[in-house]
Amino acid sequence: MRAVTSAVPPLEIQGLRFGYGRAETVRGVSLTLLPGDCYGFLGHNGAGKTTVMRLALGLLRPHAGSVRILGHDALRSPRLARAGVGALIERPGFHLHATAHRNLAWLARLQGQPRRLAAADASRTLELLGLGAAAGRPVGGFSMGMRQRLGIAAALLGRPRLLLLDEPGNGLDPEGIADLRRLLRRLADDGTTILLSSHQLLEIDGLCNRIGVLREGAMVVEGDLESLRAGLSTRHVVAGHPLRALEQRLRDLGLAPAAVGNRLTVELGDRAPGAVARELVAVGELEAFAPEPPTLEAIYLRATNGEPWQVPARADTKAPAAEPALPQPTWTTAQRPLLRAFGHELRTTFGRRSTWPLLCVPVAVAAWSVLAYDRRTTESARRVASGQVFSADAGSAFVATAHALQAAVPVLAVVALWLASQTIAAELSHDILRNTLLRSVRRADVLLGKFAAILVALGAGFVATVGGTAALAAALLGFHDLEEVSRHGDRQVLAAATDVVPVLLRSVMHCVPPLAAAAAIGLAASALARRPARAVLLALLLVLAPEILRDALHDHAGWLLTSHLPTGLRDDSAIGYLEAAARGAADAFWRWRGTALVAPLAWMVLPFGVAAATLRRLRVP
Ligand code: ATP
Image (cartoon, rainbow, N blue to C red; front, side):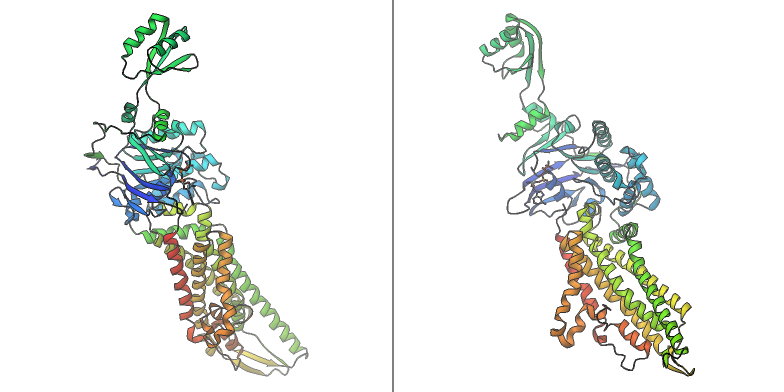
């Protein structure tokens, strides 16, 4: 049995104002949706319908006004407000390489659904939209109409109580539109409240019980469709012979008939229909004389022609006393937003086709470096044995590891910059970020989730790099003292393993903060640049450009991030120190040890702050 809850208007917008530039795009829009309403939001191209929906969903911040969704202040508590909302705004964006089912299951889990429920919900909504057969296909191969259906399916995940659909019929074939109308009718009958924007009147007619018409950002008329029809005088259709005589008679009566094909339409004003019919019968053969209720088109045109229109309130407008509530889901969407965002970002980061290959690059570079070092030491030993040189070091896994990290850590830093710079920017370009932000999560949660997911990916790459390097170096060379071997077979210890082990451990640990900083810089670049290519260039620039200050900074150059990463040109980092110590160099020196922790931390916190501030104010199209 359904629970009964008090009827809070599912959507209440009051005095909403907004402008993209100086001109106001939304001028004091107010509208209220009552439970179970199917509300047609009409207006010409560019009237501001999509903008109002974006404002209601928190994708844009209004300059003035208030939005309440399901009883929550959508501007102050967007997470709670969006917990019961499903939305489709303009083009739906998806991960193109992932299947339709996987895309939806990811979103369902972001909403807070447990894994099995999410998979079942994804299948359910795909079936509802007629995409069951395409569930296992990558979205990249979908037609425009199929993507639109998928967007609607995504909006229906979790059985939302309020559904905001922006031109859902875009790209659908006539069969698809008919199916969509049937589906929306059923959802509305089941108690879902729907706001449906369109400039296709046929999409709205017969489906919505209320409409609002927007003109140049202002609501020109809003009301119950029946009341609006009642507010317009009904036209009568006249058919008969001779049509000319009938038309002339109507004119003689002071009316203004209009010929439409082989019929006439006429507004009778305050004349009694019976009296007019008798007049017509007197001059010809009257075949039809019937009232024609105002079409939605007539209402729309009347609303948009600029004349003031007082809509009479209907006495039988839905009484907001009590509403049948939809069966509540067993999961609560508004809980643990950070964890949900982190899980989502983790799934999408590792679900991306490029992540694993990218993470394998530093592993391969490190392995190649160890093999090259092993070849060099074998060659040196051969030359010593053949008497070409007097002595050479015998090689050790410590030196091999140091060389490998010198080669692989910069690559990993570039991977960090790449992965992070592609998050917000690429998701904005592909309309994916909107899908995430439409769910019940705060932007701060999304950013932290992205950062944490990238750190996990980097961590995996780093562990694989260090672990792989250590295992290969141990197998080929062994972690023992580095000895110099002379032609006569004398051996002299250059670097004792017991001295190098702590340096190795410390150096490995000190690789982590600069890599995390690179990820934060990538995120900031991603939020600032908004385009994937520009973002990666900006990220590289942010890391490398400060290098030109190195000479000017003198003893403060330790504050440069590049002082804590091997760069190929110079290596004053912990790894450089490890390399010197492992070789047994007498002048082994960690130049920027004093700032080895604080400088990368500063490079992490500052860009993260920039990314957070930028994302907070970001207008999501
Ligand atoms: P349509 O029916 O064509 O989708 P709409 O009623 O949904 O139109 P909106 O997309 O809300 O209209 O656009 C309202 C106005 O805001 C238009 O004049 C449009 O040019 C402008 N606009 C929309 N997005 C932006 C943007 N990102 N930057 C600047 N102006 C914008």
